[in-house]
Length: 323
Ligand code: F6P
Image (cartoon, rainbow, N blue to C red; front, side):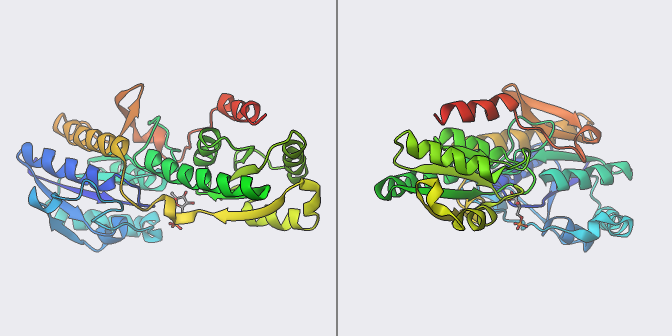
């Protein structure tokens, strides 16, 4: 093999740059040329590729986002879009592709692989919902951003005897909400995986008030059937029964921005390097993830179109700890 390409796709995640750097430098160490694809699959379909040397990826390890850019690309979901991408890869002399991204991106990688092109995925999404990796690039940093916000909100909530609904990211997955809720000592968590009963939640907040708590903090995943705005609308009709005044904070994309922490830099570096190692060994059609403290390869066929479930024990623990 002489030339590979790397792209970042879907929602950016802190640590993607560290993964790009690892792919480029370990690829060069194999004696390969590495091309960077701009704007994910969107750029791929238009052949937007640039050679990346060791110096081009200098000084990016500590940067959030992705120097290659990312996009969500509806065109790539079509056979026509994917055929165009394959033509672009072949016309640039690319012999294998590394896809750094989350669920949608790895589903796309699987499609490329099924069309006969060598692909290796690298598990990267702040949602942590990929089958094949216990933890994905960006989760730890995003969680710490959410936690810092929760810690700050708790102090002001206690000063005023208020309840806060704090909305974190997670369109289809409540991992960030659950873990931020446990690590942040929330009174309740609301996740898409569990049907929300706003009446029961109101009762939980009121119980917290009755137990003498100075605040009630509820961490809500954006994708829950009752997200923070819907819950606020529901509660505002009769806020008094909560015991607390209610305020809402939506963290949004602030969780995806910013510098990756040490954990994400190290994880991204190891997964990026492992993707190149896998290609060098002739492995393809696999996701490079992290399982039981080490790199693990999972066939993309087992990853695509599936989502990792929340741990029910942690959901139960979050409730017990909120006493
Ligand atoms: O996939 C990661 C994620 O941050 C989700 O948690 C969130 O729902 C979504 O991306 C937001 O996507 P966009 O940046 O396209 O609005």
